Length: 139
Image 1 (cartoon, rainbow, N blue to C red):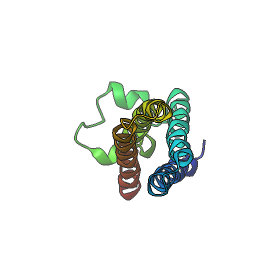
Image 2 (image 1 turned 45 degrees about the vertical axis):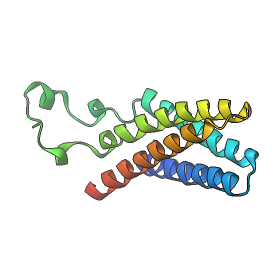
Image 3 (image 1 turned 180 degrees about the horizontal axis):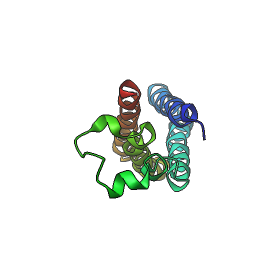
């Protein structure tokens, strides 16, 4: 899979979801809140696909002899491949999707508890966005 696709698509997911949730709150339209939360869930599914497809594993980018001969220094952050630096972001997207599922459940039951879950899901997804931005800056 193309590297550009790995770090560009999540950004579109995040901002579309945040826009949908925010618009739904401001205009008091539950449909848009739920659509925003569903987009967070879709981002989590995409993240699971990336994680299960071994697109971010260091084994694809580091030679086995480097690992066995301890050539890789623990303190050298610049030697870490770009794809591997994206791993925390994708893990945060999965966590965000789980919280968004709980938010959808509470929103469909017309409980105000959904607000906390969707806020935390959005903040965790934004954390993932900034992890991607940090990885791009070091690239």
